[in-house]
Length: 124
Image (cartoon, rainbow, N blue to C red):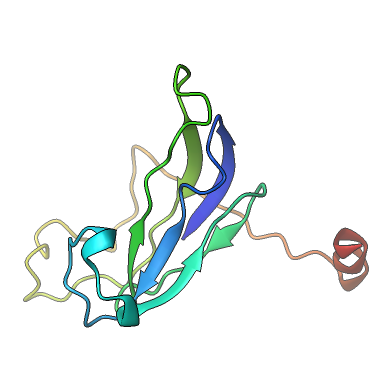
């Protein structure tokens, strides 16, 4: 899951995410990909714009971030979250994976579901 937090000095035509069919070869540059295998183009511009990617169903690539003013640094701040099932015993990272909670760096993300009234008010 990727969530847009903000940006500075970013050109409006940069920083887009492209979704690809699983048949696309991994690690190809965007200009070398097969156009027919591009499923979607998404560009997050508003605070908390979020994209959920199911990695076993789609591949994705990111278009570079370009500066409006080339003298200043361009930044694009994203919150990246990974969720997944634990690996199986025969997976290559099985020795690194665990269902045990992290004792030194615990983390909790509360999910707040607004009431229907609040949701409607937010959309106006």
